[in-house]
Amino acid sequence: MPSRLRPTASVAADAVLVGDPGRALLLAQELLEQPKMSNHARGLWGYSGRTPEGRPLTIQSTGMGGPSATLVLGELAELGVRRAVRVGTCTGLAETLELGEILVAERAIAAGGSAAAHGVALDEVVTPDLPLTERLAKAPGGLRRGTVASFDSRPGDQAPPPGAVAADMQTAPLLARARALGIEMAALLIVAETAGGAHLDKEPLETAEKRAGLAASTTLSA
Image 1 (tube, rainbow, N blue to C red):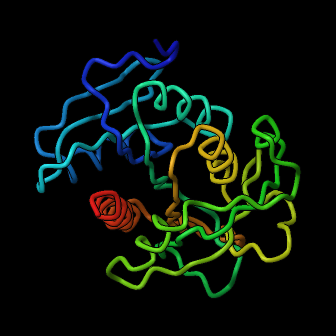
Image 2 (image 1 turned 180 degrees about the vertical axis):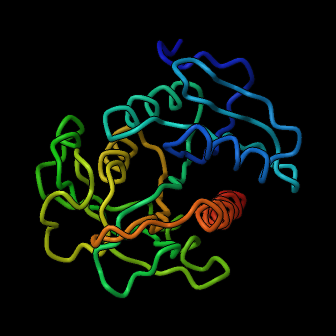
Image 3 (image 1 turned 30 degrees about the vertical axis):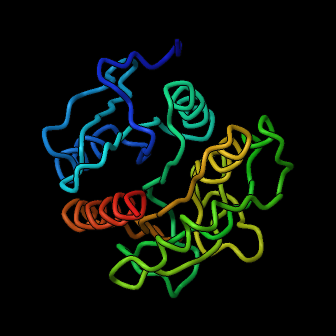
């Protein structure tokens, strides 16, 4: 039995992972019919239910940063999760990325040490599950593909590695942990701030969260 999650409802084989518990609630209300809270231990809110098409889906918050997220993913694997899509936020590093844009992570660079616990060296590239990533890239709205750098501190405080168009705190360690667990995983990242300090307001952020959540759910249903 997992030591951090305390499931009170069945956990689906497919999961959408988010850092923020509030985003988990938002997406549960948006994507599931009659969602049931499947976890509230440690403030890691999780919800399970069925999509309008009748497919089981779990939406689980992971907390902030790679160490928390990878611990949660490991416990979800114990509970039967086999495929997952991360729906998170990132700092846009490329000038061509606009606030509110959704990025499909096609590569993740381990720019912090938390991925090392899962066999990934500093600056090593981790790749997501290819079929899931290809389906995400075909979601309505023409989502952009790109490379993200995952740090252990606030994205933007350090110089990004070459080739990274965005920075976050979870994608590389999560992908590394998923690979070790045999979980098929991909990631969608909402550009919530820029390297210059501009931030996405609450309402457009929620709109982007719903759009990204729908893309993740549709991809997992395929």
